Length: 260
Image (cartoon, rainbow, N blue to C red; front, side, top):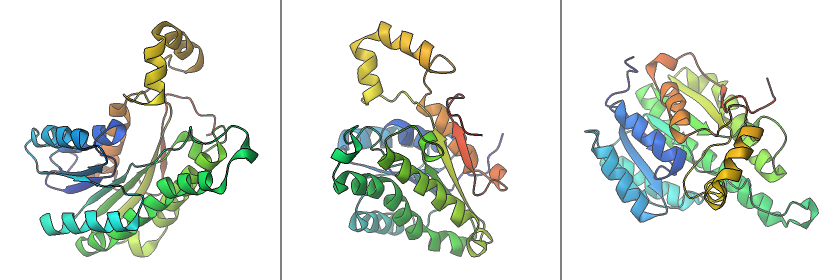
């Protein structure tokens, strides 16, 4: 299937690892030029090499997008290099394991840091790129949320932040001034995903047999998802073929979530 995005320019936050990296490579496979940011230089360098191996352009920018100043710096670099942007994937997030299970023992900082890392980072990146997309009459903005942005079950500061991201994409998707400029806004809500160097991966490495037994018992498919399975959905949403998908929250969880 020709997705119609060859030659487009994309930016993925947190694009050097995990789901973000998989999205970057998937878009590059479709002919997109891809900019990524991250905090670990070695991961950035390797991902840039892997993107360029697809015969497209790549930018790797070491940055922390949880601050407005860093987001502005990234946007200036992209503008100076490419002069435009067609696709934004708000992938940076996290905090689902932060804090203390005893809710009242958590200071304000836990709630605020998780909200800033997820919701406000998505707000800042999104509002920074909308002017480009309005000028060129085309754009795709996708935010990586979580099944816990749609239902209960996680730690509340994480659910609140992810629900805010989902709400952001829905509200912008209802904004006629934006969507009638050819911009769509969607969120992708992964369930449990096996990502190297994360908590799940550490548990698996500590006791592979116990982890495999837990997966059979706990997960509907008997396994966790992969970053590539999430990336494939995101890439489709970035495409011309997904022009009518707007304001949606797409679950990619193998059937884990309980909401309709």
